[in-house]
Image (cartoon, rainbow, N blue to C red; front, side, top):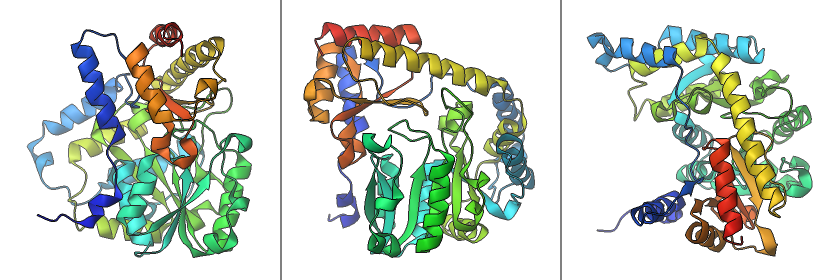
Amino acid sequence: MNFSRRLDLFGDEVFAALNARRRALEAEGRRVYDLSVGTPDFEPPAHVVEALRESAADPANWKYSLHDKDELLAAACSYYESRFGVGGVTPDMVMSCRGTQEGLGYVCAALADPGEVGLVPDPCYPVFQNATLLAGARPAYYPLTAEHDFLPCLAEIPAEVADAAKYLILSLPANPVGSVGTPEVYEEAIAFARAHDLIVIHDNAYSDIVFDGEPGGSFLSYPGAAEVGVEFLSLSKSFNVTGARLSFLVGRPDVVAAARKLRGQVDFGMFYPEQDAAIAALTGPRDSVERQRLLYQERRDALCDGLEAIGWERPNAHGSMFVWARIPGGRTDSVAFALELMECSGVIVTPGASFGPSGEGYVRMALVMPPDELREAVAAIAAAGL
């Protein structure tokens, strides 16, 4: 059997390999600190769980949904105004999707024909590259480097590359590098999109996990953003509902309509109980979200302070649930270092190289343990001489 050459676009899944070794270490009785995968360990709010439970008890809600409920679209529009101060979001600017990963696949395929170009950050969340490849498009990478505080520097993208691109993927707060957007960055992106006739796709998964300053915002809050772009709003990290895949594409209506058309060919819509859970999250109290942000900041401080104290360069960690750390001792092979770290200390991290060429020399750590356990992990790293 000869399978599609499309499979050759993707290498082995690094998380699967790390998880397999984690299970082996645990079977040996080793203490393991798994900081590789960003799955929140906090509980979802009770009112969100109850909304799903009540909705699932209604037999009528087990039919094909086929569409987003009017109440869901209205809730998303209202959320943008109450949470981000973005008025004027209308139902034709909103589409639910089963997580940003799925939604991004539809948007990239709707915007680019095979062989065309999509601008992708490097390092980046791997789905940005993979959605581009699945669309048959070619990723053109723009680097996120320490010299620019791991923020986009769009002026350095060659004009001929920008003119050839159909879209620019922007993601702030950024996974894996932990940088947080500034007004100047968003304004530059809007001007860049107009100058080069492309669409901005902004992933806003971590707007509620921003440290040391003002709360996170929305790309769509900047003048002209809805004319040149769309944004993914994910409830996964804010409300700890990663398994439910509650996400929305919001922004320029024709882009949303194009993505919706593609989605309709392969998906019957979001399960009604999940829609009701999303409505509860969007319209309910958000005090738990702020408490959780402060808890993430405590974890960030425990891990970054600890690593710095044992001789590591202080990691970049201004937002998101991740810490981006340069490998100590002048080492550059992130895969080799991650494997050695796991074997010698039981601490599992993700090699920076798995996020793109500019990630080499770094590792990503997820803030998925309480501060005391993170301090234990740092102590294990120190004891291992790393």
